[in-house]
Length: 252
Ligand SMILES: *Cc1c(COP(=O)(O)O)cnc(C)c1O
Image (tube, rainbow, N blue to C red; front, side, top):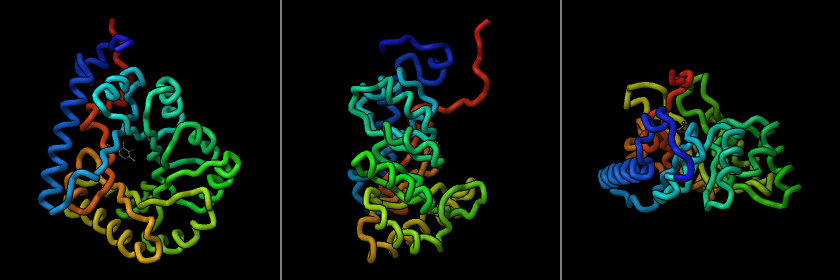
């Protein structure tokens, strides 16, 4: 560690974050393996995307030291700042949250992958900017599988037309689908969301074989997601500790 930890950081990450993260990571991989075994799947290719939102850059150095370098951020500004602080480290950054068109340039300064494509307007704006920069971007299409109004993503029935329109945007490299399950304790409803995303992927596969990935499952539901076919798990709190969004505790 190049920077010492505040009391709040020690409370969340432990006195030795590298050790905490390595232990959490090993525990998660073991649970992924067990879930994959139940589903008769090979766990090796299942990707654990470490959702690093709210984890400061200096703490992410401990994650890097623990061999974790595949980070997901939902806020572009935060991701950009942290990626700048960690410039030079070999990190794969994904933006996993809704993107406003006016944040495209910021996102493209650090992101290798975008998980929340949900409109053709955004696809067009992204493609235009990528063309100007002479580069491509891997994207996943977000689908609202829960029907919850608070969630972003395409309605499932809009997906075929959306995928059919994407080849117009040559700089976008679609590789899969992404969803957030319903916000509920009801595991059956959560599984329904995952199953729906998988069915949509399977239905799309005939026409769009490049749509392979299923980005689904978070700290509370990743085992069900593995059983239902997830290929990318987006896990934050189970790896980095619970996020606190309250006001910072200022020592007296
Ligand atoms: C925060 C977040 C996650 C991870 O949530 P945890 O419950 O902390 O694992 C996954 N996906 C998205 C889009 C998120 O914003």
